[in-house]
Length: 326
Image (cartoon, rainbow, N blue to C red; front, side):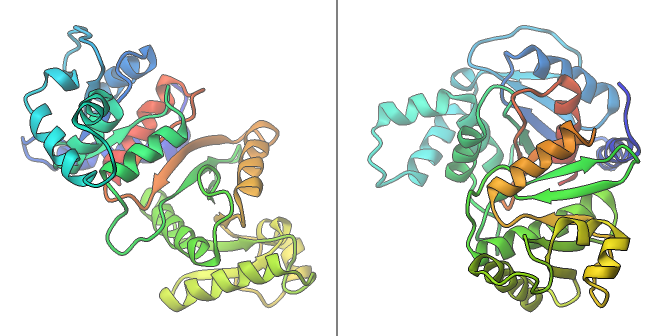
């Protein structure tokens, strides 16, 4: 496959981490839609790259016999009774009977979530078949959010044609985040941008206004979120409210925001709602020719990755590497 520099960096990081396990099992990544040929092809690629140890999870036996690839059928696995019992405790008082719980845990998504929760794997990749809503629901029910994180959200790594890598958030999950949720999204996206790209995050809080060019409650909403972010991380480089051109184009920034922290050099873009974020990433991908990696879920207690249902085996391989790193 043809890869960009950031993709090569991600594969190299994952392989380096795997090599540091000194003979023990490298990071285990669950591929929860094992019947899908793209997942099976990705499993082979992951092994070849040394990025992780893949496990295909499926409802029925696959019997593929691929070297280095384990296969799990939930209801046939030794851990199934314990994970059912663990899930039953989590869902106590939710009105689900034993039959419902058993059926739920036979679903590879939920089995993978509990398997991951129990510490038997290090990350999971889903979404080639299941919708983002289904993937997110299973993650929330089985894993919950990370310590100190109140809001699970999503982000995309956008690899531009000139090789630059940007982070867009949230483009796949929360339709209309509150200012508090927008602050959580911002902090998670900035941290993940640095973790995955190695770049210091430079965050633009986007709006239809730049530094008071328009007065509206939606502008105030973004400003409140930015102030919350600053109160929680005073060292983060962040500016807003900004229109996209003022955040991305240095000459426009010089005119619209001459004294700003961001001078047309933002690499993390926070959208005020899902309408803006989802439309923007698709325009960047389809008209701008960028490669979109994601949606990558963030804020969960364990790496719980989502995909677009139009993904390729190469996309799955790359997201598995991201899961291994995160």
